[in-house]
Every structure is written in C-alpha cells, then in structure tokens.
Image (cartoon, rainbow, N blue to C red; front, side, top):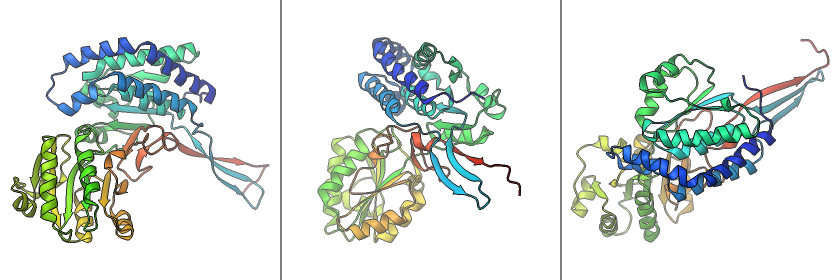
Length: 398
C-alpha cells in the first residue's frame, strides 16, 4: 500500500509534468509520427485518436495545469454525526489505492487520465494499446522524471507493456493489488475487461446518442446541432448517431429533405426508416438492429416518431445510456423528455458533443461512465474517490 502523498507533492508533480510536456513537445510529436507510420490505418477513428499534434499537446499541458490548481479531492468531509454517547462520527473521501487504466490508441489518456487518478491520491497502472506504444513510453518517461525530481518513487506511475494474453492473465490474477479498473475504448475492450477482471470496473460505455426534433423545434437550431454532433469528430463517444423527427412537426418532409442535403455536404452516409426513406429517397435500413449500433464513422440513421412518448421509448430501448438531446422551444416538454430518458446526460437545444468533463467544468475526466454505480457520466477528480468512516471515541463500548 502506497502511503498517501501530500497534496503539495501531488501538485508539484503535475506542474512539473506540464513543463516537461512543453519542453519535449517536438520529441513527442516525432516519436508519435513513428507510431502513426507503424499503424496499419484501417480504422479512421482509431487513427484520429492516435495522432499527437500541437493542439493535443496543448490540451495535455492545460489538463496538468488545471489539475494542479484544483482542490484536493481526498479528505473532503461528506457527513458528520455526534452519537448520543459522545462519539464523533465523520465520513471523508479517500483514495482507492491503485487504479489500472486500459485504453486504446490515445496517448493523451496517458497524461490526462493518469493525471486525474494521480491527483486523487492513487498509484497508476497504465495499459495502453500496441499502436501507441512509443508515444506512451515517452510520456511515461516524463511522468517518471517528474516523480523523481520531486523525490517520489517511480512506482506511482507504471506502464504495463503486456500483450492480450498477458493482460488477461493479469486481470484474472493480478501480481499486485488493484482496487479499480477503468477501460477506455471500444465495446470489445470493455467486454474483455469486464469478463476477466477480479476487481470493480468503471465502464466508460459506448455512445449511440440520439437527437429528437420535437414538433415545436427551432429548425435552424436542429440542423446546426445535428451537423455538429455528427461531423465535428466522428471518433468520440459523444458523437451523434441517430435522429428522430416528430411527424407533428409542420412540413416535416421539407425539413427531412433539408437535413439530407446538409448531411450530404459532409459526405455522411444517411439511412432512414421506411417513412423517412420514402420522404427523402435515401436508402432504407435493413433491419431494426442498426438502431443499437454506434458508428464512429460518417454515418447516421434518421427515423420518424408520432409522439414524444414514442421518442422517449425508442431512445430508452436503443441508446447506449450516454447522451440524448431534444430540440424544442417548449420547456415543459423538454423537462419531461429529460426526466424520462435514461441517459447519463440529457440536453435541451444543445449538441451531445458537450458530454465531456472539461466542458462540464470538471477540468477533464477519467472516463464517461454509462454505469449507474458509483458515478454516472463524466468522472472528474471529485468522483474518483471512495470514502472512509472516522470515529473518535473516549472509551465508549456498545
């Protein structure tokens, strides 16, 4: 068990990490180019996540600076109670101990997720994907430098360079204590981790997010929000995959054609249910199974519903429990939709692309949980803690 590092020590490491990332910017980018050229390039979303450019380095540096300036999430008092016998009972936040992060292709996770877990008092085990190995090892060497310069053991951040079989063996029978595992990646990675892990897993789930255009929608807002959700970044879990349109929307067929025209400008493949396909002459979906799919690509499915209730039911049946947005000028209808859609984040008149720790004011996130325990949605610094009871007595017995 690692003794908890003081908040001053933790912050010093994070601040130093920000400086080192700036110093080593050119090196990191050129090492990442080796990873990029080694990558087979058959998955567009994966390739986008693998690249480290100036914008990504800037974001890594900013996340370290923000984390260093945030208050300590450990030791926060959540509950106080004085027993009738005089005992003082307090519940405080506590570190988990050791957190393992399993992820694919994204070197920025090595910085940002590692940083959040470290700031909240935990030892970090990083298991990145083989496609980003060189970039990850470079970043871990910076972590080690920041730790050693602050006279802290390098063991606080450890990189597990394991293949699939070794990873499975470690999950099933860890050679060191692991308190929590966070898989960051596609459905296969998450299923693999859940199947083999022997300790709690926070599921950073799939997206498959919906926008519902209600009959009282502002259609300009609807178009902008759908285009933004679908086209700005296809490789992320908060991207948009499905659109539902209310048949009570005046001239919904006109809006449908307009939507198709806009999406085609971005070379998005559009499929529709029978009613939408008939109205717009686009291909019809082969079967309803596609409503469950997360695309991570320039692809969208649009369908027609006859009521708000039908929209809510359809979203709850098919969505990934991540994000859903209603476009409407009627606040009461929006509130009903938001209360009844079973997703981690629900929106009125805004893009699902905002489901993100940084955008929600958390200063980044470790994961976006689609589980309901122990925290749902973006998991920020203040959520990456467990709790502990402190009882102060003077000899009381029961």
